[in-house]
Amino acid sequence: LGARTVPDCSIAIDNGIIQDIGPKKRIAKDYKFDDEIDARDRIVIPGLVDTHMHSYQVATKGQTCDSELLKWLRSYIFPWEGHLSRKRARACAELSYIEMAKSGTTCFSDFTSTRFTDEAFSVAEKIGLRANIGRTMMDYNAPKDMLEDTVSDIEDSRALIMRWHGRCNGRLRFMVTPRFDVTCSDELLVEAFALAKEYNLVFQTHAQENLGEVAFERKRFGVPAIKHLNKLGLLGSNVLLAHCVWLDKKDFTLLAKNNVKVAHCPGSNMYLASGIAPVPEMLKNKISVGLGSDVGAYGNYSMFEQMRLAVLLQKVHTLRPHAMDHHTVFSMATSGGAACVGLSKEIGEIRVGRKADLTLLDKRSLAFSPLHDVIAQVVYSAGKVCVSDVIVDGKVIVRDRQLTTINEEKTIRRASKALVS
Ligand SMILES: [Zn+2]
Image (tube, rainbow, N blue to C red):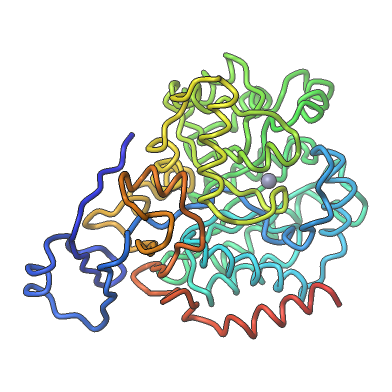
């Protein structure tokens, strides 16, 4: 793992793809441009990937500060999601996706809720982010107003695949998202996995996040989530598991053997007092790890913050300053995230032939003055305040800190109003 930095070069983009990278003079001579960004004062990094978040929970911000996972779900999240309206769902997606875009996140992976998933797709289509969006499934042990039957969970998801998957030149993708085995029947998990296989989709669920959850699984299945999924034959290279905080030796072997990916959410693991995920051991076992903000179990969408939390948490946990270096966490937020969402050959690196998903940082911001080590300063000093421009699929969606695809101010005002009325 390690990112290479290249000074003073130009990037030529056509048809959403990086066509060439080289000295400015040569690129200017070889290509004719319709549009140009003067990046002399910029640092260009691969667009950041948020591998795990819940846009429809964003409105619980500020109300949920002092709970552990199962109580947090019962007291705040289920009541909120259970009473969601279409209008509020849309407002949540708008506020979430605007914040992500302006924080330099170009690709995300969103568990919406059991209803109104169309709204998230429609907002992502409009704003221009690369989206992996799932409809949360639960057919067991859920509150009455959120409990669904197995057939409608699957059929609703299939209808969403038909309506949205692959749209906008493949920028919008459906993801199969049973919430977790605490609220899903085995039948649902098996059918959801089959649906993911049928359409070649990512299958994402939560696993071994918290000790209360693990105790529940032991009681119900005799084993925690990963061994339970393995028994059902549901571990594979298209599987993305969020959290994986409480792992034993056998779990590492199962994840590595089946090429399962992990969404590490350090902010959420601290926020809900869940624990410290053994990320260095996952990497030692060659398990692909990405980072997730896991909002609403965290307060904001900045992946800069998640990188910083991930690296600092391992230092303080192990008392070893080199427990996980800044190159490793930078890769987790870019190429690692790309692998998690099944796009490792398409995004996550600035390379000829890759999709042009890029984030530009203002070199004149305090984070980079003076500039000694770009990656170290991105990880330890930068924040969303440094993000000046964002490109997704070759299209500039944030230019000079303003969204180009929507009227930002008007949208934020309307969405905020919808969430308090
Ligand atoms: Zn989550």
